[in-house]
Image (tube, rainbow, N blue to C red):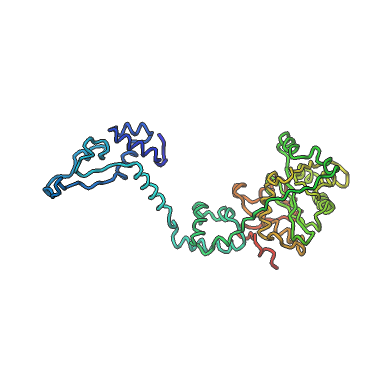
Length: 402
């Protein structure tokens, strides 16, 4: 039998039809695959009472001692649905109507969900604990992972409480949702050299290569632009397995600047660790990534160690993981912000706060700890990466205030 499932309107209609046909409770129970007690409780809870008619046909009041109780109501199913005398009966009646029963059920269900299921003491604890953390720009997932003792109700309930003004903080205190504008179509045609670079490096080639080599480390690469009036931007690198993010400031969005970062990485990291971490890179069709030799090869020796692939034009979802993580950068530096005065320490600060943010997709862990499965802590230290305690994570404009 079906267990722990509410009756539907179809179930209630079958109960009403069964009662009208004088079927027993056991028969109805078997037909709708519900227990005998469930049917009885449903009928008793939702039967409709009708007052007895104590007037005669000529409009005079009858004997007040007349017994209006029907003995049939003392026996199962305790309602008048299947009674042949129901239409002309002047005694008290109880009738089960499926539509009315279902409306009553939905009203009870709706009323049960109104209000808040928190005591004033619980609201006070949530306010005092979470308000300073929310002002740091911490996300709802991060709060739920690190404070399950006070957030022991569902996330939809939390949002409902926030929107209802239960807490001292409101919807505008949370990190904004970045909305991406629809990309404009470009009429610019690729040069012959660019078309040759893409041979064997298109997204279909990437899918085929990964299907044949599923255990390789995949790095998504992209850039984040600053103010439109300035050449500065960020180069971002993200490892799919751990969602770990690296951020580097570029003085301009050019191949020379991208080459400079890869030279730095090759000089900073031990040779074997570099080869292990940068096995496959997936990026978009930005012109700054078209110097493929300086990305795929070791600069000192010319050894080919990295497989570089390009997404299809205007399909950012093919590297959606890094696009999603750019949202966290925008919490700190909204679109249009200037990157001119940012230094390496500022980039490290943003990067490490993002990497210390706990994620549901990592079973409540942060990307910094997840990256330790791919490399040693000493490697992360070489890249100026460090761990920040959950309650100290800041992801808003206050992070870079000096």
